[in-house]
Length: 421
Image (cartoon, rainbow, N blue to C red; front, side):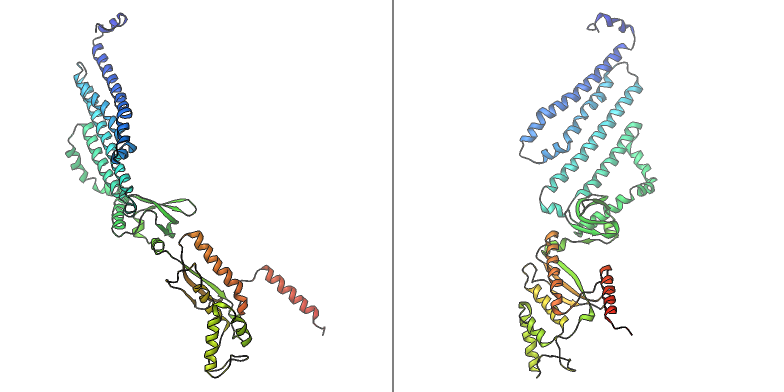
């Protein structure tokens, strides 16, 4: 201790002074080793990793694996150095070595967790196949195993017992472990089923009405699946609920390239009637159904009668305005360039209801983009609603305030014009 200033020489009379000074020097060396390791990491390792053409080392750098391992250096300095300081109480040496060893185990476990995350990043960067078969759930199971083992080793190190002795006590805790990790175990089984049956992928549009989820899958983890709804909110769904409950996946619609339009016009049944010859002649000039009306006219003439002008026949087919409109709608859809003609296309009646006779449109658009799909659907029904009166048909609609006002005005006007008794 001759290098100490003369003002500090009296401290040498304290019997523990050399031990305390050496302990402080050890702490200083540990701090300097931490600073030096991080300095080497930033100045040497990082440039080498950036310059390397390989991708795995970049993933390790981004996830912080190297910086995690750099924290091991000061812990090792304390672990090895405290035993070399004479005069330290054996209890203190044991505590410092155990804490340093536990810290090393914890740091290595965190580095392994970051390593698994880096592996997931590399896997997801491989292309579309990785999005179809995510492995994030399996890696999270591996992280759970790593942290459980690390926890056992840390506890065994701190209490200075064999890890096997602690593991033997886990048998009695199995019921508690099953209760604590119930959701994780169920989700693990569900993740295996989802992956093996290809039930869910990143980017899929799914709909789960019971959980309020309707949007795109943005993350598939061990315990949860995140769905970004169309209003940009995010719904977190437990993974096992996707197996225990039912959900709708719209992936097949997107892969087919066509989205179905299924909507009905509710026809007022009181407006359905037979058409006269004048009405048929007027509609025959309408391009979509000109051929249909010509065929109907030839069929009626082949039966030995002209097109009806007054009352229907008892045994021969007549032309109704609803049937003519139905053929017009089908011809209109067949002529559309925005609909898939290679998929199902039909116009059909459904069972009559108190709100009218449903005339359902069933067809598929050539696009699956929502905005374009809604525009095509709106254009179709705009046209059909506008041309419906040309066939003498009316849509059923619940009467509103304007309807009652108009009816009362007309009733009052009729009462005013009627002669007094």
